[in-house]
Image (cartoon, rainbow, N blue to C red; front, side, top):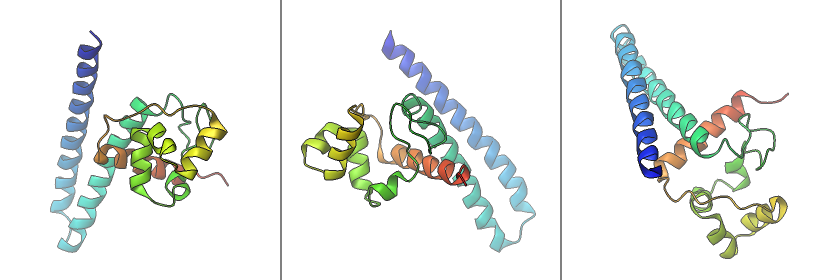
Length: 152
């Protein structure tokens, strides 16, 4: 029963993303017709960033929002995620490994991972189901939200 519910949720998510993509492409195509050639690439890149951001937002809601604050600045049950790449010294491999299996990274001796675990005394659940593109979409969404909602 749980598997069916998860498959149904995933199907709805994919259909929503496809619909957003179709709408975005339609508006972009209309906009592209009126743009000079040098601006067309800018419009396409902007559209792709928007799609990636929507995907990251949905993945964040589904996997992260239960424990991490959506404003990316304030701690919640888990630490604030804004600036996470800088705290991991922009080492995507370590971040991806930690997201997929935090305990393996901690047991492997990663100092930053050990400090996180000691400070929060809570284990990040393993997200081994997320592929690189999905993790990248979530991290990009976190960065975008963090920058957009900067506290002054």
